[in-house]
Length: 128
Image (cartoon, rainbow, N blue to C red; front, side, top):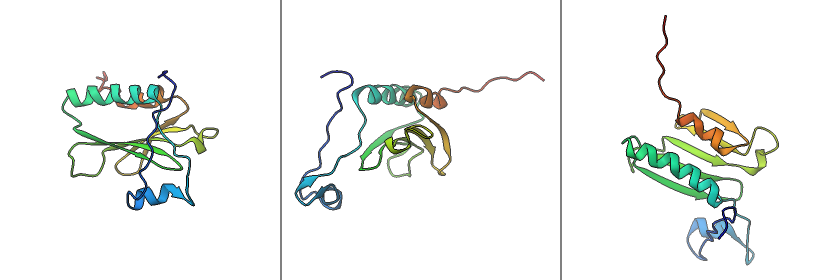
């Protein structure tokens, strides 16, 4: 596998509502997904935050319009952050965005690494 080759997740036939939505008239609709390089970048940030004890769980969601990597503090809660890839916005604001639990778009852009920098902003001491 090359670094730009996408990881294919195909829905199972008869897998409930999610599987039925992806299978239409005997053919599979195109599904947006993260490629290997994108997942490496996301999991690098995720690993640092897990090691710091801030994050504990994640979920992946692939659809026809966007792919979402959700981050949780506890498994039973709503996601703290969603890292979204929406190719439909690639020419406008950028395909990648980080969305907070409140729905606030924290950062959006064309380069995933720069969008993920929003998690690396540390607290700085400001002299007055």
